Amino acid sequence: MAHQPLDDLELDELENFLESPSVHEECQTFVMAHGFLTALAICPFSLPVDKWLPIVFEEEPAFKDAKEKDRIEKLVSRLFIDIQKELESEDDFLVPCELEVTHNEEEFSELQDWACGFMEGVFLTERHWFETEKEEEIAELLVPFMVASGLFDDEEVTQIRSNPKLTQSCIDKIPDVVTDLFLALRTEPEKKRQPFPVKKGNKKPGSSKHSGQKKSGKHK
Image 1 (spheres, rainbow, N blue to C red):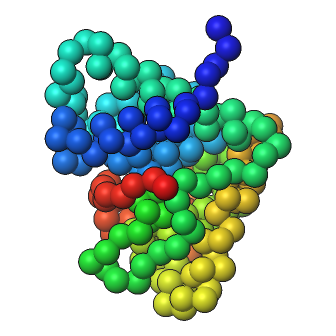
Image 2: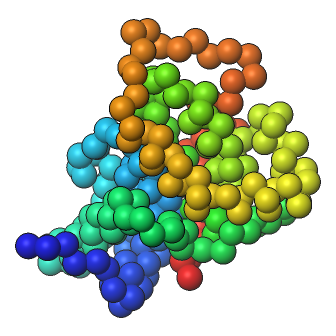
């Protein structure tokens, strides 16, 4: 049976569930889950659903019954396929929120949520992003996501975030860079015989000051 993209009502249903009392307080919101699934869809390694779905929920939600469980899990899986199809198309990639961040550490924009989810997906499948001859290219392409997430205190990222105009210019590139990452990782890379040593100043996002932190937000 042909894949049926989520319609607006289904997107609202999924968003509402992910922010309902039925889920753990650390459950990903719709926006964060979208970023997380985007990274997984870009990665050339296909991670089984049973490996990533529990990460979206943090822990098993309090579903009303087996029917609701099946319904919600299918919506999340279909969202993942929607993102895969979008990446494979020639259409511009759409981030489900405004491309803006706040410089108030007590507040988080939806784009920060999305970028945090994206980087969580990168961390989950990290070796499939970096153990190729394109490691430096991939690391460079990830800078806008690192800037948007607010999770990293690398010198380059900190310098960009200290300048609002430079920050906006950087995060405005995210939709195009999503496509660039997909193309870079889906072209035949040469696997390295041994792991590439991390050099001083390498922007490979192996850690962050808030690794694993989850935030809240809504899609628009």
